[in-house]
Length: 118
Image (cartoon, rainbow, N blue to C red; front, side, top):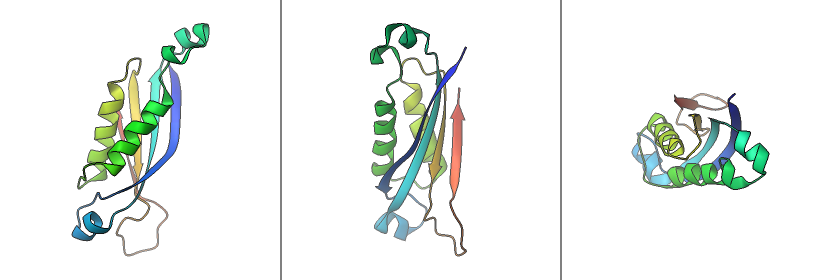
């Protein structure tokens, strides 16, 4: 049996993008994370040490958003996903990075990419 933890809407201000003005001016990025894990131990113990701590996932996402700039949000999603996979108990992870202020000269709601790793 595989269980899931979902964390949505972690936001921060970062300087990611391919254009100089994106790296200079920055913008808000939003991250959603879903991890597959197993709740059997935590259900029995009722102890946070026996599950994936979602605060740790939030800290990973926020540190990546506000950290060293990358050109592509695909790379940012991969970076976050790989770091999440280092957490004990995570079987797989799916990370979506939203760039709602992407430099597109048309009206749009959101741009996002999703990276899933086993």
